[in-house]
Image 1 (cartoon, rainbow, N blue to C red):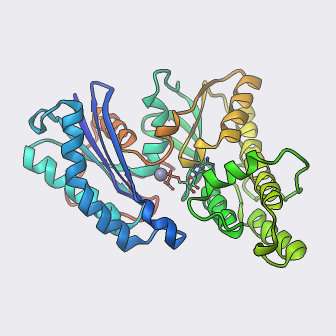
Image 2 (image 1 turned 135 degrees about the horizontal axis):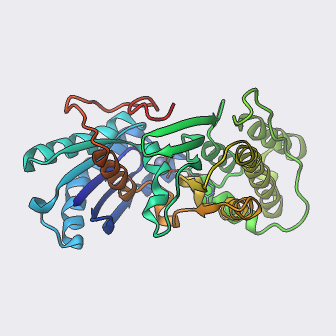
Length: 338
Ligand code: KG4
Ligand code: ZN
């Protein structure tokens, strides 16, 4: 089966073709121009998706050496994300499927990340525990089958990726913050500032607004202004924030492993690219004797391969969707995550 996937929920336009489970192409066009605005500008994002999507589809087919007529299924992200951006990929996907007379499956972006471990040769085994961490979501999930997903915990305020981005801004590093914080942290080897890990009412929930505020207070109290921070001060703050933010994630995951009987452990989403988080996750898996699946870095950030894979999974489950289905901004649509 040849599946064409489209992703356009935020600042990456991506097109992928998967043939019988093998990734034939996974093209990603990143909108780097948002950097100068310090974050994603929705209207500019939509315009860039609109400009690139058609050439990217053509290039993807060429790279995969597959003609449009040979595509059996079209999938596109329907949400959550920026509405204008989502509408480009979703409308394009629906029209393409209609035009070639093939089925169309709308895919939830978070579910795309959640199942991205299946893009690896070694796949997660059900039931598995998943930590899905991105710029918009922080979810601890118990996954028992392709369509049975139980939400154990989520953030009660900022997503962890969002906290990386905000702290990066405070330190004057800019957007996207994750890779910049990681880089600065790698230049620090001394003591850490003991930033707080917030408690939450839900035992598997997360909260990152406390640590973000603690970083801001620390800068204000000790340096007055970010301009007065030396590079080594910035590196120490970045390393301390990264350490405690990741510790907060790890603590909840370790608790869930003890409370639920799972076969494997999976880490996904943009923040799963973080080196320290990947290392800590490997250690938890070893300590608890669980199979560990973490996608390669290219599949952690937004990509269409995960959308094509998830769409094919839903199609094989026999699910079909109305063509009237619209784009949606938050995690509500497929309703698989309960
Ligand atoms: O999944 P993603 O590409 O987009 C969303 O669906 O949100 O995730 C983007 C997020 C951003 O907040 C970015 O700062 C974070 O992932 N991120 C990282 C790293 N690389 C990307 N966070 C921590 N460490 C990284 N190396
Ligand atoms: Zn994402």
